[in-house]
Length: 93
Image 1 (spheres, rainbow, N blue to C red):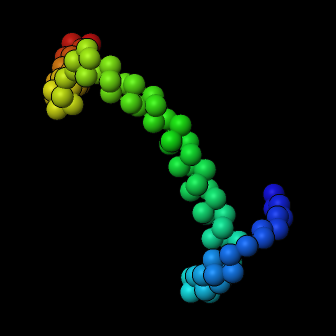
Image 2: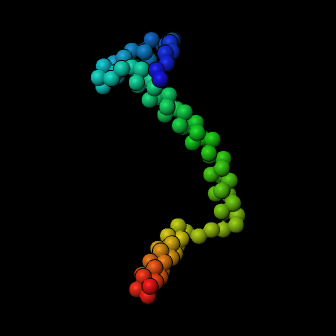
Image 3: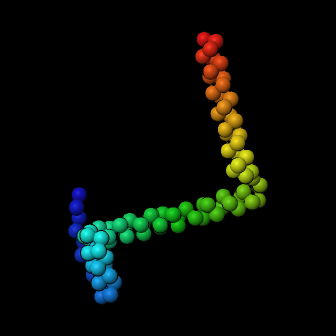
């Protein structure tokens, strides 16, 4: 669905930069504005996650944790064991 909106630029220089960039990219100015708004909204979502990330990091520092390399190695070993077990069952069955 296409919706229309009028954007009033109070900054003539910003409007000129937008039009020049649109011409340079061979793209409608509305596409550039849409992309910019989308990026801004996504950055706001990321900013909302920041307190959760910081709390998790603080908990990790307080309670301790393990380096990712250790966890990654254990996961690899677990996958290998499961694959071997599945192969052994296939041979027996």
